[in-house]
Image 1 (spheres, rainbow, N blue to C red):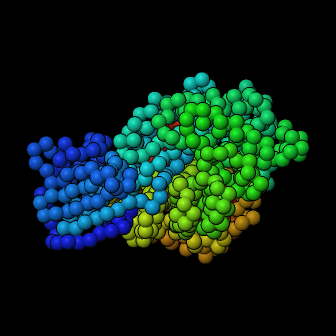
Image 2: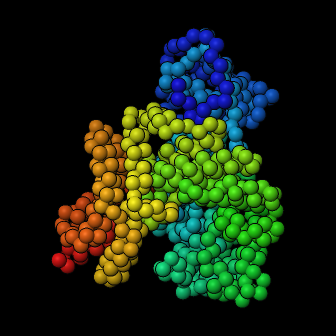
Image 3: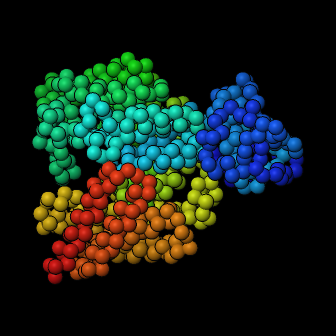
Length: 599
């Protein structure tokens, strides 16, 4: 039997059983909303008022999410002290029933970590439709995830008092409230999330807020110029703007948490706050702002969360950190030191969550090695040092070009590790095929594609060599084509792929493309277009590296990818942000056409 999460205690007491389908559940004893449970569960279970096989029993001696399942010849008893415990016991029974593994047995299980979370980025172009968000919540609930955040920066959430981003089809307070209630029925805490110091470029681009920027003319980093992204924290109007933004989510939230984010204030101390930062310190200026904002959140009876990148790299900050703030330490590469950081947090008495990643972003098809290492490392460290839990992240940098299925294995692996024992690669693939994808062998294709970065000739922090075609394509079509073209060429030539790496990856993805011919589904279409993006990227890099001419075939492939991406986008997501996501692909197509004429 393949159970994810794996159970802690399973004792077989008798024979295999074959209940008639659908298996009847005692309606009067069912403590959760049966109508809300994942639709696939209703294929083999039904509520029944007159006769039943499955009965739920209240047992106040059990921990909150703990359950005991007793499978007998004539009935199944699920004991729990809470709705969530009963629901998780039911999900375990469902997994057994769907795999025809029902047997006389006793199962006792409970999670290792209190918070088993997922955060998805809805601010980098891709804002899922309500239907897609409900599907995601349902899928995560089946994995026994109990904490979900929708990352907000810019205009992906409509602040009615500041309606600048209304044209981007943002999430509204009414939609958030509905999703919050829906998630609660599935034992998931939908936690409000909004950034409020760095990552403020969309607001600071507007003339009415430009004066609130730390550096109004932007900043240089990694050899590139970036738009202003960080608020000037000493201006009271900066705090007032963020409080207005936060207020709308705070007043409608039923969670006990609020994620302020407050990460990566890149320009802090370089502009208007430079004098004060030199007089005191950058950390003190930062944490004074953090303290004011956390007090505002706490005034609404919510516990603030925030990213830990500033504090963790400045040990003197621990003593200045506001009490009750929960620090979220993030790391997305295989060698990230969760163990060392968590030991320091524990020694300083700081409450914490750890945040690895699905590694789907900046990669087309995910980075399997980094996903596995960060997820396992974070969960092991959180358990060792009694952390609150782990929240894996799923970002959307550089156009959010990765498709939804490439995040599944990251979600599921984290679900298994945060509950108990880690699942194997084969167990992940088999479980997803049966319980989510409903297509045998498709998860193995996702798995194989996610290993492509291990064939590259150079490791890239938080990205891959293949993806650099997208990363270094200027999406601003107003930039002269010659400049866009030269910048992309020089970026690729500065970190070239070897022929062996390119050939090995092409062989890998084309083999998977051949296997996809037997599938007909949205997921298969998404994987196919991902493979096309990867093939376009590799072939483009090969021609640039070897000085070979680009052709109409390259341009036609780019055009086909763009058209397919538009169709696939609208299957799961809102229209707002789609053109921004496409802008890199459109710009790359123009560069290909420009270079093809230079021969």
